[in-house]
Length: 212
View 1 (cartoon, rainbow, N blue to C red):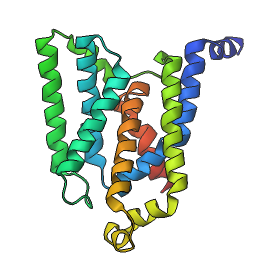
View 2 (cartoon, rainbow, N blue to C red):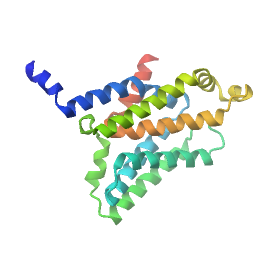
View 3 (cartoon, rainbow, N blue to C red):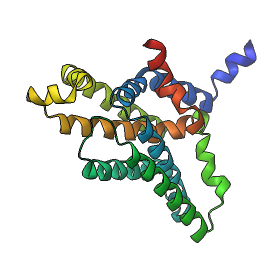
């Protein structure tokens, strides 16, 4: 028991527990957005976007998290630009984006001699490898998510119910849809660093399905 309590005082363990507590309390809210807006395929594209960001960051010796977040935001904005009807998610466009990002990551790894094992480590992630700067970013993302939902709860609920009806009521559906998709991009980029791709659904989707 004393060894267990001592382990909890170690800085990596303390940071990991703090990060998991914050993410566990806030990130499932973005899972609700993923399911209600039918964006399950898009999350795969964003996960592969993080892998592309990791490959580029390793090739250019840049920090992984900011680059991955920026790349995911660019991917989402590009898809929003091309999408005409968002009522049923992005569908095939998400699959195409996933293939493109993975192909681009492979190209970057080949041209810059980036070891594939280093890039694919992003598939695992670790809450015990976080720095305090990562905790600050996590708190910022959690606050953005909480503030947005608290300030727009009725609007978001109307969009979840039916986008056409919400549009007819004068709700700026496109703007709120874009905001929610951008929040999802932020959450997935950090969740990949926190838990990795193989466990990301345990943080975003499974709590929502259990609650439902």
